[in-house]
Amino acid sequence: GTNFRKEELENVKTIFQDKDWKNIQRIIHSELKETDPSMELEMELLMEGKRVWYRCRVGCIKKCEDNNALYLIALNNIQKQKTREEDLINAKEKAESQEKLKTSFLANMSHEIRTPMNSILGFSDLIQRSEDRNERRQYLDIIKSSGRYLLNIINDVIDISKIESGLIDIKVHRVDINEMISELADIYRSDSRIQTKDVEIIPIMPLQNADALILTDKTRL
Image 1 (cartoon, one colour):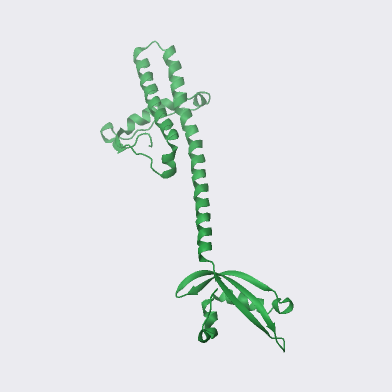
Image 2 (image 1 turned 45 degrees about the vertical axis):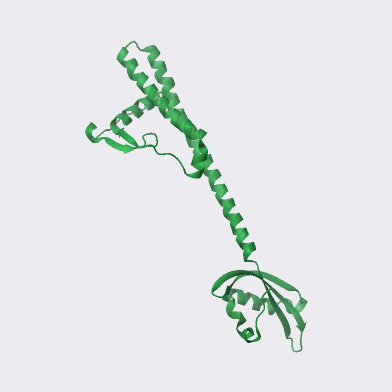
């Protein structure tokens, strides 16, 4: 509990926030006079310039004449308990946040995996039907590019612990944006979902090839 020296008793209410002191007064002037129970409140008190959590117990000790009564206000420091509760709440919120991130990541990856897979299957089919050597070489390049992209995604899924701890490796190298846009256009053109709809994919590449080189992680981009 907390004890106050005699000279401090008159100023004891100064440690309470206004709303808490009003609650104590409300308790004293209401049901406690009728039934003599005690009531507990949890509140932050100002102790030596710091806010500290206490459990405040208000109880009627003795009824007096003229409808007066003597009350006890007992304080018990529960700061450690509150700190533990806050730590548990923070840990729970962090775990829930990580679980949402993991779920979102896996849902996104399942979508991302389908795109290069469709490309690999689509262009494999085109290679079987094409007799043009240059065309087949072009299709093989796209399949190879899609395979590398798919492997990068699979590595991320396998190494999901890096996602949770924020340690994704960024591999920076020179990337030709025009070349990448062209590859993506070919990949999406081969997607069966596109082929069954009245959709035309038109790449727009306003930069000259010499201006289209940047340093970035191509897979992330």
